[in-house]
Length: 278
Image 1 (cartoon, one colour):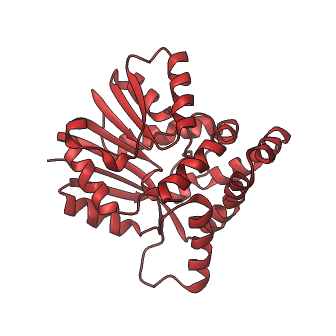
Image 2 (cartoon, rainbow, N blue to C red; image 1 turned 45 degrees about the horizontal axis):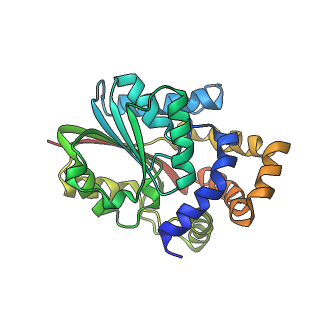
């Protein structure tokens, strides 16, 4: 199976479980700059969205793209917050169906629409957008330079790219054998191409033409999240759902343990990036 096929299959099978565990915002939560602010994990997810908007100094948007939208949590939130129209893309037909159901229930069907589509097939004619939102999806893309080039072409002048993605630690020193082995387990179970360090993202964004670039490591701010997710996944309902979903989803759940290890060892970095099109 191709990488996209594996990703699609994984999320088709696992999305109902992640909805029980993560809720409609299928991404990390923000627990304060030091990661020590006690809060409900669902509020932490909303706070992550707000903190990323602050990083990019985004106070308005009219037309936005949610590239790798999951079940559309960010697309709906941002559309409501700014009174904007939104397009969300996912490889998973199950996610798109769930996204449309949530959106209809929220009364946002006129503002927010979804497509089952590879984000890398987007063309400048699909835009322009004044905000491109990439929340924990860029790690699935092998050709990240092409991704930044595409995002730049899709933005209107003065538009903003906001990205949160998984990276490995800065280099040098080179990754050692133990670090490479842990990363490979995560790549295999979450269907990821090799991660890059945050510095590489900065360089690619600059080559694409982006300016006013800001990037930060928010690993400490999100560090409590995987512990919260693991505890939620150990409920009877979640365990029963995992068993029904089959082996690939069970393996994906097991990968949470490796992600937690990666954060604790300083091997995995939760990288955020904001940049403007001149």
